[in-house]
Image (cartoon, rainbow, N blue to C red; front, top):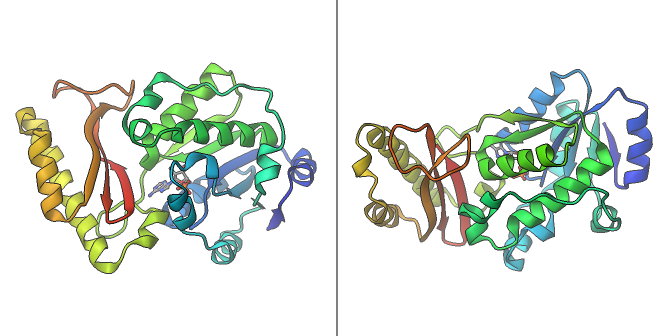
Length: 271
Ligand code: AMP
């Protein structure tokens, strides 16, 4: 595996290839990332993984600081997975140039996570736009766990007529049901159990509301989550996954999107 810290040497290398399958990450690698990488490797193009904890997408400094980082362990894992290229850029490498393409931010960026994390999606699209210009990937592998992010990146790519193709990858879960996430590393064992209980409660709720939508009583559900051990709930809403609009009637295809805190750890998922 070749490791790059600067975009010019990376770009020289990319010129020698027939195209790149790109897996962007913030490190703290887990089974979710591994599944993206395995799918990327199936393309037969060179797989490039990036690790960059993007400060611009964190609305709180403390959250940026406490974000799990373990580059040594990540490198070991990526080598084992026979990844071709790893790009670990510095802040300057990413932000020290003016991108040709302007970020397109769909209006749905103001909903859900966008409402509770001011500037978050502006930061995400900014960094993704820059990575795309540096790498010009043929494919970009993204997880449905961060569905709103995936939706907004797709809209940007469509609007700016970028030739990269997004490959949507299913959410990988721990045995206890919760979505794999780097942030889980900041949970204690007992907090993991709380997260798992909340997941199982919401999954069975979703099954019930499919049959009887009047059971979707947000205040009641939020109270139940607090009882189960959540400390704060940012949102709990049903959204149509095709057009990313809030679902008001039960017959539409939708996912239940939620974000909540266990102490200081913020968890998001959709089921
Ligand atoms: P992150 O390192 O959290 O920025 O995530 C990098 C990529 O991995 C994003 O496309 C995420 O959506 C994806 N990802 C994170 N967790 C999971 C998961 N549990 N299952 C599938 N994909 C995931």
